[in-house]
Length: 289
Image 1 (cartoon, rainbow, N blue to C red):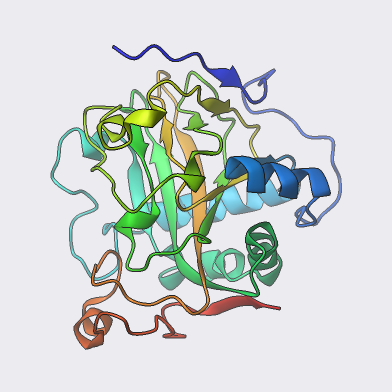
Image 2: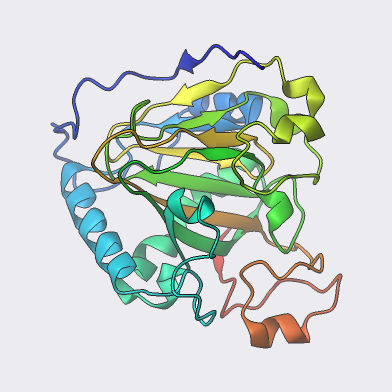
């Protein structure tokens, strides 16, 4: 058995914290300390990303868009589930809400957030890979340790995800955990998200004794994590949802690696391994320096 001591990244003083910030714009300016921490650890928490008004707005918009969608991925006709009883109780997942909700599209294509992603990774341009709502329902299963980028249709050391907390995220309801600095040693080997929370450590045994960081957040906070950062989430041990929304950024110039992932059928059938992923309708440029 692997015994791991968890470092608390922050403390949540109340469920659904009330904010005093009256600024009406999201916080898209990064500090030098945040940039340094991200490049050192492979992840960073951004406090007060949404104002109180923005939090109310986007929580309502995203929740409405999730409720309106039966499919996990547009065009897959999967009824919103994979059919794996354990995985389907990890979270409710809705991918590419920007394609089915004009309101969500405004957030997903936000240039200033794309610039944050490019700045953290120190690259000139970012395209959208996809967005996804990740709603852990009451009593939901944990999310096993995994790495994101190996699932995707491209390989890159500079892909990144912004993960936005729509509710307070605590140890009790499914906070994220990350292994600091491990992204530098990660390859594109991976495991499925299954019942064995620690199966990733069979692939990367040198990580077994590392201490993860627990990223608790207030509603409206956000975090970025590199596409090769190993991460997990605890179970939701409450009778309430833990709602989050993520936007994944792909560096401009990435090439198709042969995996379909979220690609629509028509685009998937046209691609050959090694082709540029530069379809502006599916992977629009979000920011270009």
